[in-house]
Image (cartoon, rainbow, N blue to C red; front, top):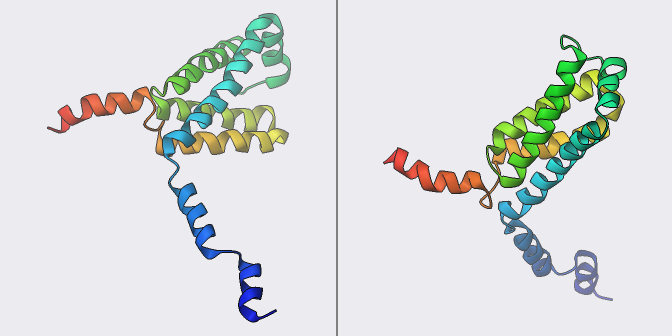
Length: 157
C-alpha cells in the first residue's frame, strides 16, 4: 500500500467532508429554531396540564415540597401555571419569542436553585434551548418575523 492510499483511507475524501459541512452550515436557522420552540413549549405546557389536572395536589406541592422564598404557595402556583400556559403558546406561534424565552429561563433558574437543584442535567437542556431562542429569536417561520417585516421597515423609513 502506498502513502497516498493510506492517507486517503485515514482521512476519507476531503471533498466529501467539506460538502457535508457546507450542507450542515446551510441549514436555515428557522428549521433549527422550530423544534427548539416546540420542545420547550411542550415541557412547560405539559407541566401546566399536570397541575391543572389536580389543582389540590399542585397547591400541596407548592406548600410542602417547592417552598419558594418570598411567594405564598397559592400565588406561586397561580403564577407558575399562568406562565406555563401562556409562554408555550407564544413559542409555538413565534410571537414575543425572546421575552417568552427570558421568562422561561427565569422560571427554569428558580426551579433549579430553589426546587430541584439535583435536576440540573434536565434544566441545563432547557436553558440551552431557551438561550438560543433568547439570543437568536424565533427564526423566519414565526409571527415575530412577519411583524418585523411588516412594521419595522416603516419605523426605519
